[in-house]
Amino acid sequence: MQTKPDFQQVQHQFCQAIRQADPAQLPQLQPERLQLYRELLLNNIASFIDNVYPIAKSLLPESLWQQLIHDFFAKEQCPSPFYNEISLQFRDYLNREQHATLEQYPWLAELLQYEWLELYLDTIELSDRTLENSEQWQLTTQVWVLVYQYPVYQWQAGMSIDECQPQPSAIMAWRDAQDQIRVDVLHPVMAILIEPLSQASQSTEQLTQMLEQYFPEWNEKQYQQQLDQLLVYLQDCELLHDRQ
Image 1 (cartoon, rainbow, N blue to C red):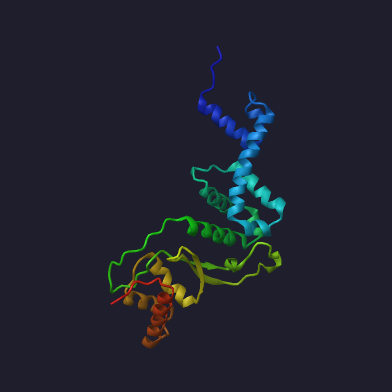
Image 2: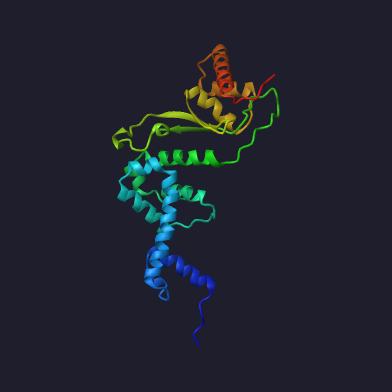
């Protein structure tokens, strides 16, 4: 007597048939219906990815972009049920697989990271940081300090691929009190000082030691000048709790 396959087995066969566009995986389902299911799912996933990475999509050849999405759809397992995380899973898939496209277009990994960051900043639940120690340097909200080899934060959809030239720089990205995404290009010294502040509050002594580590040839006056500039900059950005 032939036993019926259990639900999980049929579900697995169904998913594999859709991923691989292979009706042989599930012969009891009509190929036309299988193709309909596949197109619906693939179009949904493609729309999530397209909406998050419009600049990357505009820069790559359309056939290549579609191939990347098809590869992702066929091979990747998405553990999260949240639609917003599909785009992150797509980026992680390309990086983990060391996809040849990332080598062919050396700016692509940075561009995908930055475009995803914009979505993350727009959707993350941020709360104001409570002041823990009035003598410490402490930011009022979370910021991200990123170093790029390409100025991907300046790129726009429709630009020419010939414009994708290296320009090493550091940026700070955050969402301000008016819920607007802000991006500032940082001087290297500012990036060095703000990066640890993005993780935890710091004392003046700790920040000075950071400068001493990177610029041992400086004197005390130069260290203080940099801290003074940092203070003014963070206050102008409304990112620093008042200190005593």
